[in-house]
Length: 339
Image (cartoon, rainbow, N blue to C red; front, side):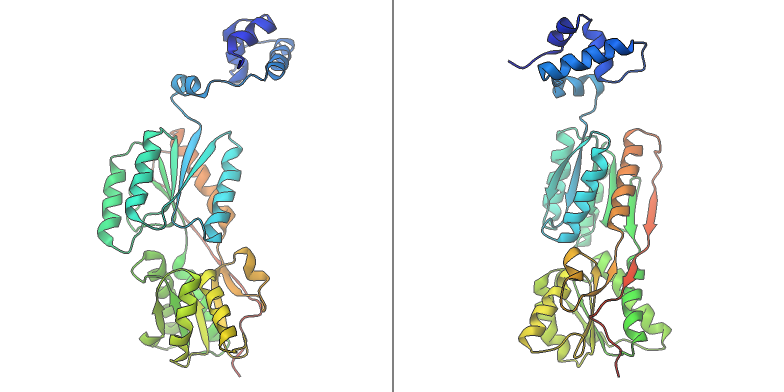
C-alpha cells in the first residue's frame, strides 16, 4: 500500500503539518536534525505526495502545455527538448500536443489543456493559411484565463500574451544576400504557403536583399508548397526550368528534398546549384556537402519562453512582452561563387 503523509509523520515522530512544511520547503523554523529525519523516512517509505491533493491546496498542477505544429520536424523536436530541459529545473512537467498545423486541433488542445488546469501554455503556432482561422484562434484564447506564450509561428497581433520570435525578415535577407555576394542573380525560392507570416516575412527579406543590389526578383522564381522534404523534391524541376543557379530553401527540410532530387538529376551541389536552408538542424552539418543555412537560436527561444511563462504564471510580469531574436548565417559547402 502506498505510504501517506500520516505514515511519514508517525514514523518520524512529528506532526503531519511538520512533514508538509518540509516537503514544500516552507520558510518555517524546523531544526536541521528534524528535517533530516523526515527526509530519511520519506526515502525509506518511498513516500510521494498525492498530486491531486497538492493541486487542490495550491491551485497549481505543476504542468504546462506545449502545442507544436509538426513534431516530426527536427526543428520542433529540438525546440521541445530544450523547453522540457528548461522547465524541469522548476519541477514542472510538460504535456505536448501535435496539431499538424490544423487550427481545429489547435483549439482542441487549447481547450484540453485548459480543462486539465495546466499552469500555462507555450504555443508554437498562431498563424494559419486561412486568416479567419487565425482570428478564430485569437478570439478563442481571449476568453481563456491560462497564461500563454507564443513562439515561432506567431501572428502580428500579439495581444496580451508574451511572444518570443526570431526576425524572419532577417533570415530571408541573410540567405539571399549571401547568394548575391557570391554572384548569383537567378535565385529561386522554395517555400511553404506564402500567406503564412513566417514565409511571407522570409520572402520580404529575399526581396529586400535584391533591392539593395538594385535588382528586381523574378516572380516566377518563387515556388510554394509546404515546409517539407516533399516541397524540395517538387520545387527543383520547376526552378531548374527557370534556369536558377541557386535556391533559397525556406527551411532545411525543403533543402533535404532538393539534395535528394539533385542526385536523381545528376546535379552537383554546389557546382551546378548552390543551396541555402534555414534552421541549422542536426543533419545539415553532416550532409555531403554540408548545408549552408541560417541558424535560429533554438535554445534561446526555449529559455526566453520558459522565463516569460513563469513570470506570467507567478504574476511577476502581467504586461505583454515581445522578444525578437536574431538569426545567424552559417556558411558551409553547399554554396559557391558563381564564376
